[in-house]
Image (cartoon, rainbow over all chains, first blue to last red; front, side, top):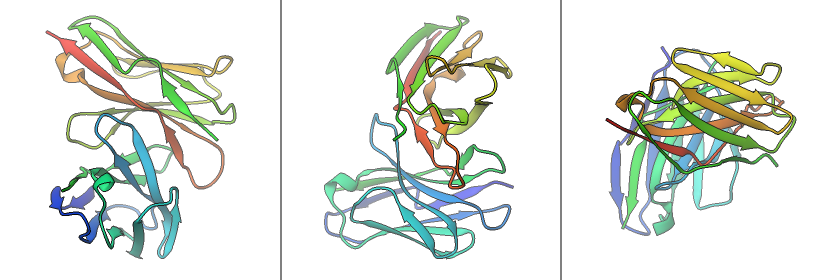
Length: 111
Length: 113
């Protein structure tokens, strides 16, 4: 199974509040994992990727952070949300080949 | 760095027509190209891929063409159906172990019955 779970599915948070989005994956161990953000009508922006437990690479400077406490768990966090953090957050894992499998996403609205 | 773009943000077609979605890439070292389909409110789904040593690959109702000379690839959908309505993304993956794809902005395909 290549199933990816993300929760919550939707979230409305006030500016300045903290954030924690969770992603868990099924399937082979030690997968490459990715966090993307997608603004309305826009493409996919890579935020973080991880090749293993505790190994996080950041692609863009921002007020978000990521952690990988377990092999199949990838968490996206923020201490204080900004309005610009609103968007559709997608977790993905690399397949055995080059393509990625994506989760169902979390719709975040910061008010 | 790599950049991947799409020629048209929106493509409208009639049901039964063939659709062609285009994509340009900048890094000639890109080794692998992928097309994804994203339906509204869902995550992208893999459609078809092609390696840089190929110029054509066919799937079920879809064909991807790669022209390395002009750094262009296209996705052709035969007999387009209403269920094909979605945003289509191309992605290019370069060499190396991190497998970080560069995604294009996306083309919204609208199929009219």
